[in-house]
Every structure is written in C-alpha cells, then in structure tokens.
Length: 212
Image (cartoon, rainbow, N blue to C red):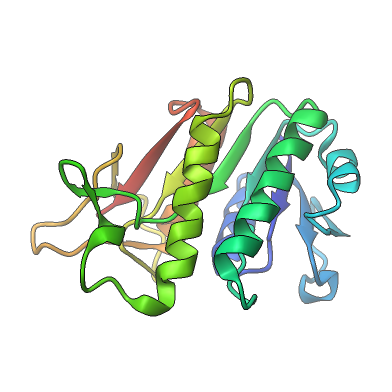
C-alpha cells in the first residue's frame, strides 16, 4: 500500500514505520523534523505542519490510508495542542478523500469497570492526564464523525520497549490484563496489531485495543 504516517519519528511512530517498511509498504513519513529520519528504501520523508489543513490534505491525497501517531507531548498545553491538531488531521483526511485513517489512541479511555474508565482512577498519574484526556477527546470526535472511515487502536496501560512477538490479544473498549493482572504491550507488537488492521480491516469506525 501507499500510506502516509504522521509523526513517524516518535516512540510509536518509529515502530509503525519499521513495521510498515518491513511489510513492503510505500511510506510517506510526515514529520516536523525530517532530518531525524535516515533514508530507507520505499520511504519518502516530508515536513508537515498538521495545523496547515490545506497543505496536509495535499500530502494525504492519493494515499491508500494514513496512520496518525501525532502527539502533543512536547507542548505546554498537551491536551489543547493534540485535540486541535487531530481536528486538522481529520478535516484534511476528509478533504483529501482519504479511504482510511488509523489513529494511535490512549489506554486511559478504556473501561476498567462498567461505566468507569482508567482515567477516572484516583491513582492515575497526574503527568499523563493531559495526554490521556486529549486522546479521550479525539476518540469522541471520531465517534461523532459521520463519514470518515476511521479506526483507533488503544494500547494497554503500559506501552513499553520490547520484542516483536506477534503473540497478543485484541479487545474492544475494555482494558486488557494478563494472568498476573498487568496491562502491557510492547511497542513493536502494538505496531504489528496496527499494521494487521491496515492490511485486513476488522474495526472500521470503532476503537479496539491490544494487550498480552
């Protein structure tokens, strides 16, 4: 496939880029700092400003799909910056007539009990609250989207460096935990699950999760 990858130089974006190239896809990496990415076969690197909707739409036009690993982690207002940027990404995807948009989500909007999400936990780390709330906001934006074919993949509570095993479980809106009560997934296996979804769509217009 000919795909665009927004945020290809970050922690998750790097894993998605590696997995996509290993599978033989043609990737256009859309990043703020193109110099961070070395030349590789089947890779085109372009500078992006996600808030420039017209330019972003032009970069997405003609692609089979786009993966968004855009984040606001480096910003003072993480939540506001991320939500505004994702509004622009969604609008640009629609303007470009993009067939599919796959979005990196967060774990904090996953249910830990009926009607209660991880973000509601009293011990949820304060330093991640802005990021988590922004991801929840974007999930709600996508759910209200009337026409775009979107998918969001939420990781487990702990998204960690680690091996690519290809052995994991998929779920819906509930947090996945292993036999020891731990909710975790390696970033490499997260990328496997996302690229599996790209190649064989099974969660059109909904969110799903992955974990051990």
